[in-house]
Length: 102
Image 1 (cartoon, one colour):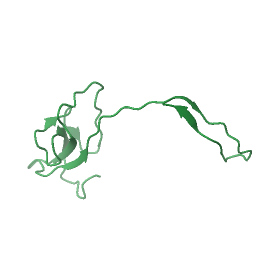
Image 2 (cartoon, helix red, strand yellow):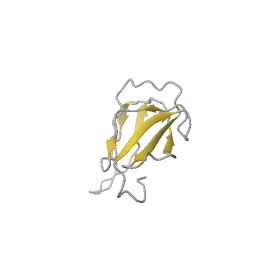
Image 3 (cartoon, one colour):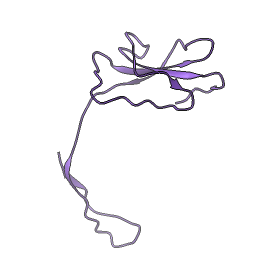
Image 4 (cartoon, rainbow, N blue to C red):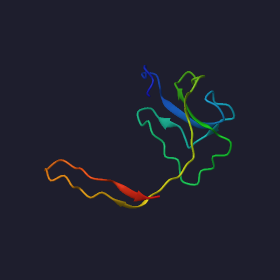
């Protein structure tokens, strides 16, 4: 969620942290210029003991003291053999059973 007032925001700083307050934070990448609002995290990035992603705003005066935070979950799931036979005969409508193998 972007901040309510962005006229003085110059950049965002993104960190992995051990709490939503930013405890033991470790910066992810470089500053994100205001307006871009996204940062790619490369594959194989170590999670270590971090449990949250925290984002601080930075203006020409100061870095925000309380970050926006979201819980971080490292999980992987995949499926194979996805199948969806469409048994609905009407154009623009679908119906059937989606199935897959885990």
